[in-house]
Length: 194
Image 1 (cartoon, one colour):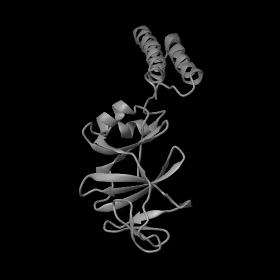
Image 2: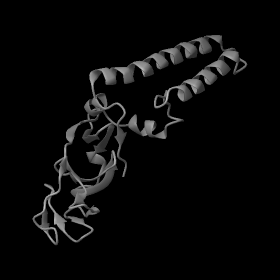
Image 3: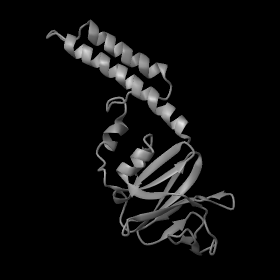
Image 4: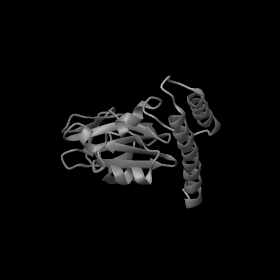
């Protein structure tokens, strides 16, 4: 994403937030003890208009976006494995997954993925979940990672036993980082929840 494109995506929400805060301050200062007044109604209408007027840009709050409340609980220094494909980005919280080796089946930006997590080492690797055009489903029991075709895989994405023995999955670039660093780089990221 170019700096100009990123900048344009940030300027509009910042301007809208500025207008929103201005109206909110005026509303608070104009409120009487009787509850909602004309300024409150105007602020709500403006809020609704702003949400509708700018597609893809909203002024989020925990009530309109329940995911926001769970994101707010993530510690800045929490380890995440971050993946981005095109415009889509997702963080996988390493310590929220089961201990031992684990496989997470997911899809991001239309690409089916499998994330091999080694929670004991606080690391992981991301692979495309297709092998020779066939979509595979993976599972892990904390010790072994297997696929729906009966093959066993190592954390490097290589089949070590079964029908696919010796074959290698295509690795998808990923970043092992902190939640804060990931969020700064990808502010529109989603968070995987098991």
